[in-house]
Length: 391
Image (cartoon, rainbow, N blue to C red; front, top):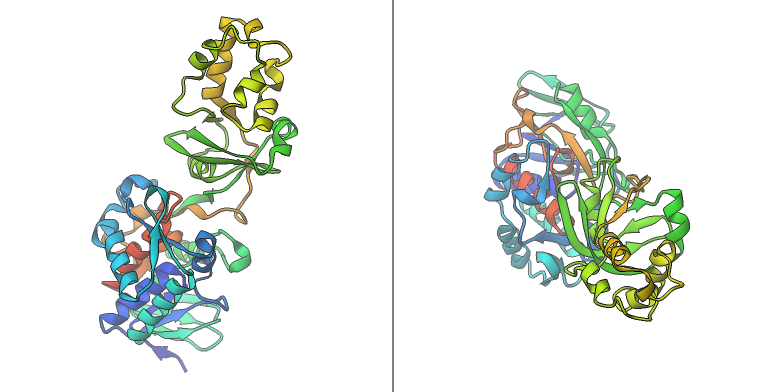
């Protein structure tokens, strides 16, 4: 026989558990359905197992969306400071790393246990693992079909749908439900993802795997100064992952290998040097990178033999190295999914579908994608909280 509850939340990840706990603590009867056999798996593997659970700088400017102002309301009404208070109330030790990133001292399992405890305190019911066979509109509510029996609810929250890391259960389920009820989908693609070298660049730089440098990477409207990592397939590291969210698949990245240094002026200051270009550059960059980068520039002659104009050109290239990737490494290697449920079909205050009363979309399934460094978890907490206050 079918059971009846007030709220069904589909997806027991960060956003789903936050929403279920908030709704349950308001006195709503909540059922949380998760098709995977483990809850919060993306939380568990994040931050090297220590969960970069928020960023103190989280604000609208740190998110990408076709509707940039959409995230403003939810982020303002549930802030990083509020989530941090929840973390501290459970005695979870934490520390701040660079650029406002907050991590657990011990384990990401502490965050999962906290969310489970919040759901238990709110008397949230669970079905896990449990697939959803179908959803239908039924009167003013919804009928959710599962192998464990049907469920009727007045509010339905979709907290699943991101395509990243399919081996831990990611599916396009949330997008299919949005389309079923007439909501638009902004085309999706991997974001915060390593980029692959084109064959010619791979032939030159592929053996530099493991070398990391401080660099500033610019792509479209994104500009990030963090570490860049060479891999056996291309480029990774925080600077590249950040820039990948802005890459349209056609334009080159601009990489400053000597950020905050006028490379042309520096080279020209050594114009009379008898040193080779790669040896001089090795004072600023790892030697193997300096050698590989300089190979087409001509390193067999002293810098004094290159001439002023050539040094200007080489300096400009060091500050503005153009790299056109051949593609990304896909959803298996991506941190998040860019695109998703079109926010123009949702209320920014409640996450509700404006034309389907009682239907909500939260977290990664929505066309709101944060920077690397805890921003996407903060969106999960904020959007889950927003829906949980009204569903």
